[in-house]
Image 1: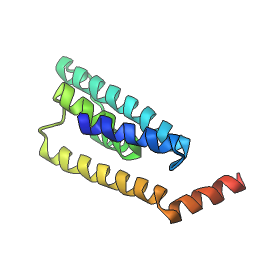
Image 2: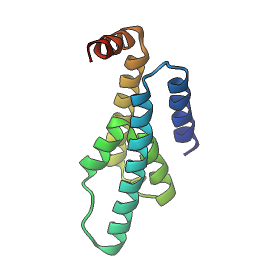
Image 3: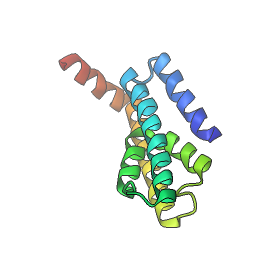
Image 4: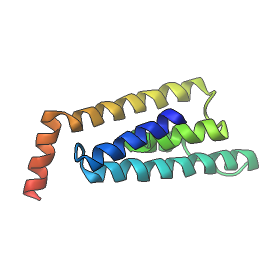
Amino acid sequence: AIASLAFLLAVVAMGILAHIPAIVVWLYLGASIVAFFMYWHDKSAARQGFWRTKENSLLLCGLVGGWPGALIAQQLFRHKSSKAEFQISFWITVFVNCAALAWVISPAGAALIRQINDVG
C-alpha cells in the first residue's frame, strides 16, 4: 500500500512539474479510486453471494492506471491477493502500464503528445 501511495504521489509531482500532462495525473487518480471501489464491491458481493465483478474488468481498470488503487484494495480487503493466476495477470498489467508511462515521459512520447496537443 505504501508503494502504491508513493507511486501516486510521484505521478502528482511529475504533473505539477509538467513532466507529464495533467490528464495523465487525473487518469491515475480517478482510475485508482474507481479500482479501489470495484475491489471493495467485488469483495462485498463475494461475501453476500451476489453478482461478482469480472476479473477482466478489474484487470482492465488496473491497466488504464488504476493499479495503485487496486493494490491498496487487494491488501486492505485481502481480496484477490492470494489467487496466483489473477496475481500474475495483475502484475503483467502493472508492468505494461508502467512501461506506457515511461514512454509518455520519454523524449519520443513527450514529443508525440506535444504534436497531438498542437493539432487539437
